[in-house]
Image (cartoon, rainbow, N blue to C red; front, side, top):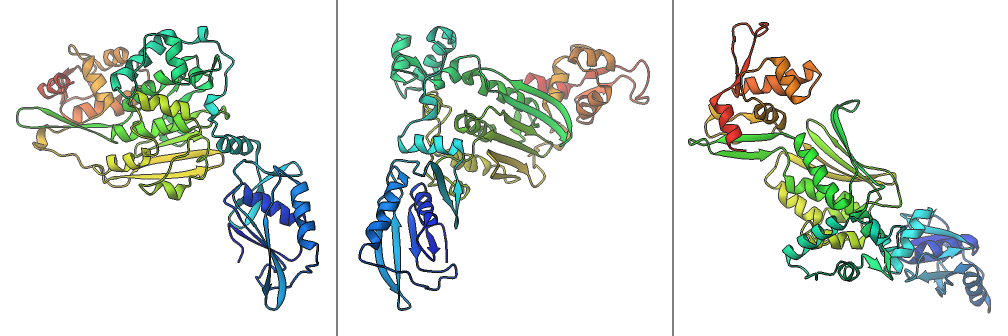
Length: 449
């Protein structure tokens, strides 16, 4: 039966050579000539010079030149030929200028991006190590110095006072040229992170486009994410606040860093983050790199393949990444305290997707049920601007909100139901002179910020 590493052919021809090229560009394999698709032997003629002639054809039509092993074998009293090739160390290999890879039991033409990726992998070259078009003078020097301070504070490497020396040491300058990694980290970006808060797939409540050097972009993106996920508080007898985010922040940061560090920067599409009531989805350009598979990510012993080694090194040195190839292991560890949240990963087209989804109702510990409200970031913002009794219109103006219904559902109603604010005329909720004031419980929430 044909598979990822076995191919049957009735006779020798260009399809045999194409299969050998596909095997060489993937995991190696065998092409068995003289056998039909059903695995039954049909035999092939093997003369005194047959093997050498076939070897010459393979050699002259491939680049780099392949030299497979060829064995004459017997199957069902018929001669067959077994062509065996290992994964080639210098990739990609071509057949008359075309490149192929093996997927399951068939050969596929490589796309241009895949050809570049194979070249980088075989030469151990990271894409972000290539020279950029910017000069050192165009980089944000203050941001570089801030980066150096963060690196030194972590203690994983010691940097000196000289800026250029440090950048060379970190390979962010190579052969006198600023690398793509340095441009991404410290220069005005060409790439963005687009984040949206959705009510449904077609209804967006709020959105933001983070357009900043990567050193800043990660924190800016996390700030927006935190603004749009729920934060629950519980209080003990002394009103000491305990908080629990809708998702573990450490897991969200790992997913965000994974999207930033491992994305394909040859693709100018945005990183997309969609926040829904019950799930958050991260999508970045670039499928899994190298030989890493989705199945590998489910285990704790997978070996990460780095498309952008310098970016990974930079975020490792600042302490944002603990160790290469442990991101999804760490995410699963963080989720152990969140049994209601499920992690799923996948690939669609040229994009990698990771999703956290609430599969069971969130359980919030409550020591005293009467004083354990669910407090969202929107409600906290409302409380923060309530320095006196205010009308609905005054509150909306202070918050900069124009949509009355959105204000009522996301801010006013949750705060009233939680007992954090009160009405001056509770018997007539729609009274024209209605005012809203913060309760003692509301004050305790703000005091805990």
